[in-house]
Length: 117
Image 1 (cartoon, rainbow, N blue to C red):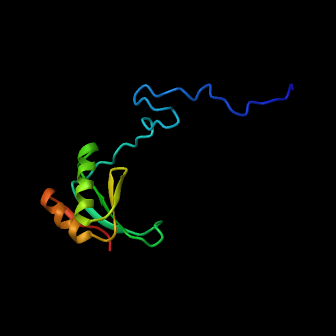
Image 2 (image 1 turned 180 degrees about the vertical axis):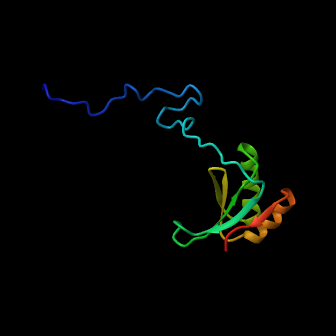
Image 3 (image 1 turned 90 degrees about the horizontal axis):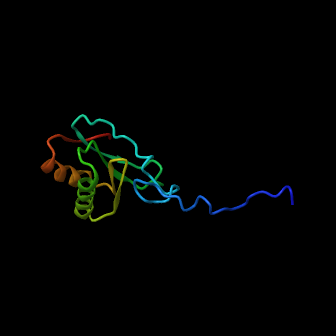
């Protein structure tokens, strides 16, 4: 078969990233986006776009990173009794809990405000 071509190979499948140890396909070391500089204001907004009408509260401008951000997100989710996630340094809390989030964040940060309508 002179015209055969390679269909599947595991030759490069076992290569791993030297920084995180994951396979190169799953490595996110190179994909980390630099965070935008914050103006010192924590903003709480509500968004429904791309969520089939379901609303989420977005908390942006937080001066936290890594484990501190994860810990804060966990506390806020427990406060609201709902789920959520962290994407690109922005905490997403399911549902419309802007007033409860505003009260909780005003205790921790100096400048907190509701953004959007």
